[in-house]
Image 1 (cartoon, rainbow over the protein chains, first blue to last red):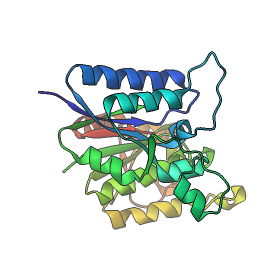
Image 2 (tube, rainbow over the protein chains, first blue to last red; image 1 turned 90 degrees about the horizontal axis):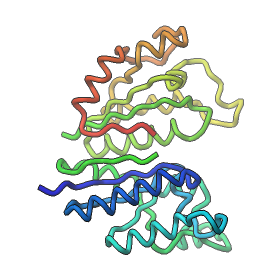
Image 3 (cartoon, chains in turn brown, green; image 1 turned 60 degrees about the vertical axis):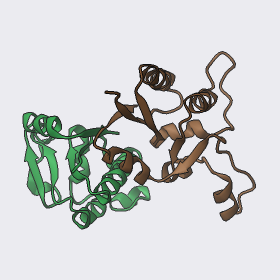
Length: 132
Length: 118
């Protein structure tokens, strides 16, 4: 029977290996016929959703890699609203509310509440895998 | 019912981990998870009363724990060995803490559906 996974990613953007491991896990799980239902970014991982980051050219651009994975597997990438705003990752709507002159949330990331993670965890057949 | 164990290892004044763990605990409880909030290692320092968080422009974090009962998180679990490492007794901690040994906490983990340590 295929397994269902919810992935919680909290590793900061400089913990490249954690992010790459999470991506590998997601791809491998799906390729084996399992389902990744939720990708949820919390704590320092939310900084990956900032499109105004410029890592050195010989290092991976994690935000782009996550967007590619989300599109490839057709999974919504959710980033916690409070954790994102605390770390300066702002979507267009909130930038308008606060009269900020710009916003920086990557297009493939969706602002979400912790409730969406809790709801994913409530499913009895879903396993939570945490990358930190 | 989903049982979620949330382990706090970090002291409150060294970053947002304590608050973000607590936020997750409250939201999980609001989604009717049975939440075990477990303090281990330096995390036990969150529970010591008489700290003045205002000195570092923060809110009294022990006040945040008072709201837990409204979400049916009735007790706070503290690891016995961690308390001993810091030479702390329950009299120095906030009310309604339940001291459990490391082995007893491992038992709790084995029966929980989810274990999160931010």
